[in-house]
Length: 116
Length: 109
Image (cartoon, rainbow over all chains, first blue to last red; front, side, top):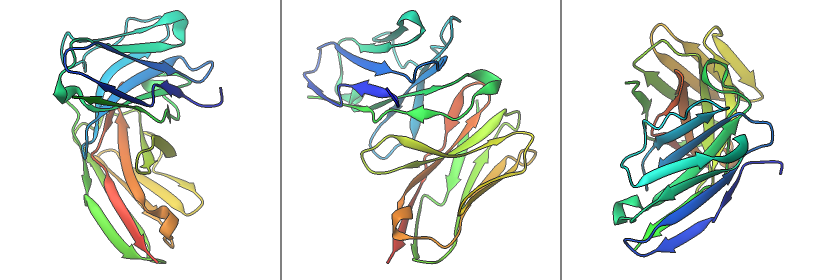
């Protein structure tokens, strides 16, 4: 596609359930980022993938959060045993390259997660 | 840890006035800095990318300056329009991108 695609756009779940959020980056982009934006807050870094390198997971808030990127393209963010404080908009972004050469960052529309 | 601060948090101006948005960061060892716009309920749209070796970058009515040594960047929007109403965020790249909380701008017609 022409842009970064995220699904689902909205997800309502019950506390304790697992959820999966998907990100399809722009074709050819080697860098992929996940951020979380809580109501009225700034963007909180979660995880960064760059090519075939080991991902930077330093922003994941707990071991309930995990992410993978298959074939250097699509990424899935998984939240296990969801808690109400996990409610937020989860944003995915990609760029042609990362690190020092990070160019323009393209964001998806986000996945809004509500945990009841 | 990189800390990014944006002041003011909110700004309301009449149409036609110039906008000045500020971004400061604590660690000057950055590769580049980006300014983004976010409309309510939407993702972020990149406005300007300024490399650490540059002092400013321009696109239409937008101009961003960067003073890396003092840890500051300023986004200027000339002749503001109601369509400029949005939240503006800056992001500093020192390997991974750190975002400020944003400045919410309202341009009154």
